[in-house]
Length: 251
Image 1 (cartoon, helix red, strand yellow):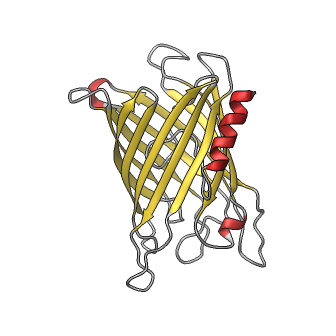
Image 2 (cartoon, one colour; image 1 turned 120 degrees about the horizontal axis):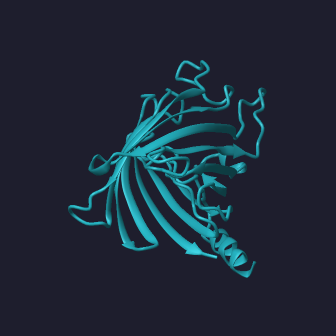
């Protein structure tokens, strides 16, 4: 409990913006799940490329948070996370807390050569959608994923998601709350076991739909940094660069 208190205190001290996604690729969830008593810190920044008036750049989205493995089993794993997010604008920053959870099984757990399977949800916000103001943070995205590693070809994942049909809208304001999830990732061991690359895709022209790609370097067994790019399907959203620092600790 002392360690948990220290962890929570550290995140609160990290300040103005925070956001812990479930274990992900670059953008979409992955079938990876934090092991029991493993605490994962994610310090992420999404750097906007759009300029508001030709000179002033939009505020970055800065994300930090905690995800913790909670099941003491090898073949069935579960993680939960608490999120805090800052967009640099109101009213979004008035309700900064979000929650996520994921449960699943790793590859080969069900039978020989079986895929990894995960189901979960994220961006369960604390502000219910208000039709009068058009504001809410209950995006409530649920998803399912399958993943399989095919030797040196890497790992391939495919899945589907569904979220709030009040908040997930396309650029014409129509409901756009479902879509496919897909990704490929691989450790480039021919170069270094510390180097990992990934490409992922989230369908839909809502604020989540995007093609993302990037690379990560492990500076230590429990510390890694991802550099990537997110290109949104909705062309009203300009691309973002992303820098993600990941740190793992054992309770």
